[in-house]
Image (cartoon, rainbow, N blue to C red; front, side, top):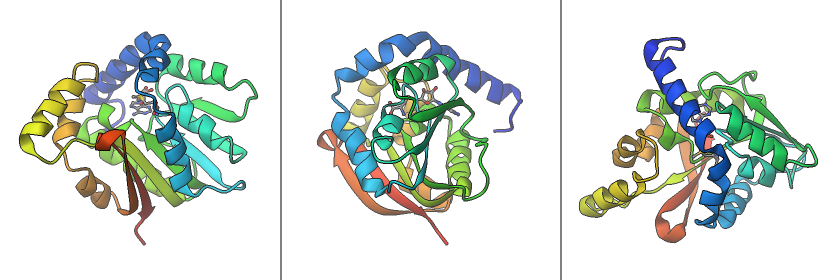
Length: 214
Ligand SMILES: C[S@@+](CC[C@H](N)C(=O)[O-])C[C@H]1O[C@@H](n2cnc3c(N)ncnc32)[C@H](O)[C@@H]1O
């Protein structure tokens, strides 16, 4: 989606409007889902080392970035929502993470400057075009591994329709399209090979460890 176009502006103001508005309730709401294990899994599967440079795309209130910061010193979290970032910053009492306001489709990093990048529950809040652009940007800036974490709708059509209807009760307007889409196909189309996959939350969530294809 071309930056500055009406579509891009509409998408951005929808996302920043929603997340700025709900930022204070985000962590209390997420606490209901007990995602600590998924955060740990995200970092563990990445195989991150202490010297690695890490980028958490769509960092939100920073849980994944802060989990990475337990293992390495150079961690950046980026997000569009200033309010989500303000909460992340507050949680980072020791100032271990650099939190920056940035669009996932225009990452301000040089090619292959990042060792490990992650996007956790970010793709489902984007229209398809933006999902593709964000993943391509992650491939551009990352030389090592990319971890993708998101909802994992069941393959059975009826169960999938029920899953989408239920999750849509609290998710953004982009979720139904994400729920019907083919994540593996998207990753492959963006130059990513899935090396390993872990399910969480009875299979409702999945964590994919990907490598940029040579
Ligand atoms: C559901 S939250 C996920 C936050 C966090 N990664 C987590 O796992 O809890 C989605 C976040 O993606 C951000 N976001 C959506 N589209 C974005 C974009 N194009 N660029 C940067 N951030 C974006 C939103 O502002 C929001 O904070």
